Image (cartoon, rainbow, N blue to C red; front, top):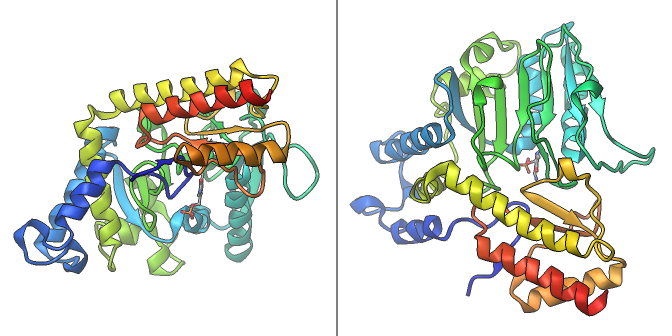
Length: 370
Ligand code: PMP
């Protein structure tokens, strides 16, 4: 009954992670109740919390210098919470902007700066056009990034989910601590996390359901964070209390545990990365093979492995394409409402066969209509 789900997030979850949740739903581990009904202070939930964290640390290679936090409010809340914590009075933070999410992070930092006496500055942007909706076709080069040597931190978005623009390198931040919104390309490949002072990611793409944000935070940075903001927004509150200061999103964290078990069973990130590259190649190859028909708005070097965006020659053909996709049990291919076109999200839980089926649809459709 399950469809081929290419949604951008919430996205498809690994079937074994869902099946385990189903099997355990009414009676978790012989306790006579659901994990949904367990106290977040009890030993049964604590085992889940610790397993989710330790598997994530092991599989993603999170350095011992970094704490793993589970927060709420979405990655959008972190847009405000990061400057609240790490933008001191009289200082400035740098932003690299190559898509809509980076714009939002910058806008929130400006508001926080106004409130709390800091500044947000653009260190590089690749936005084109003067209108409200800018277009983005690539990430900036290191030469284009002009970091402020005194910046409190440099923030960037490693993968722009809407525009399908991804960094395939770690941008140069100068001396500033590097902060990254990794929401839509978290944990799809091996990553040297020691380069980052702070990483945050909404779970609903690669690691779980919505309702929880995973944060990897260097302990020394968290300790230096501002104390003149509400306690609930200080990252040290979560860090000092193992993300259990107040009631965490227990079921979402439980599902992260299930997804982590699946990643491990699949052979870890080496296997996942290889599969992700194979999936993206299959779809991009099909699009490139019919380049006169499909338009790929993103420069080759910045093409996202997670969110593949493309257009057809007309909106009428796009509607027909979506109808044909539906016939083949494919959903979630419509581009974000702000940019239109098509978008296929090929997160970790999307099997290679789905990507191949999509590549086939892309070829068939171009041959028929091109
Ligand atoms: N950053 C990126 C890169 C995203 O893709 C998204 C959501 N699609 C967000 C931030 C916002 O996340 P949330 O909806 O969890 O606030």
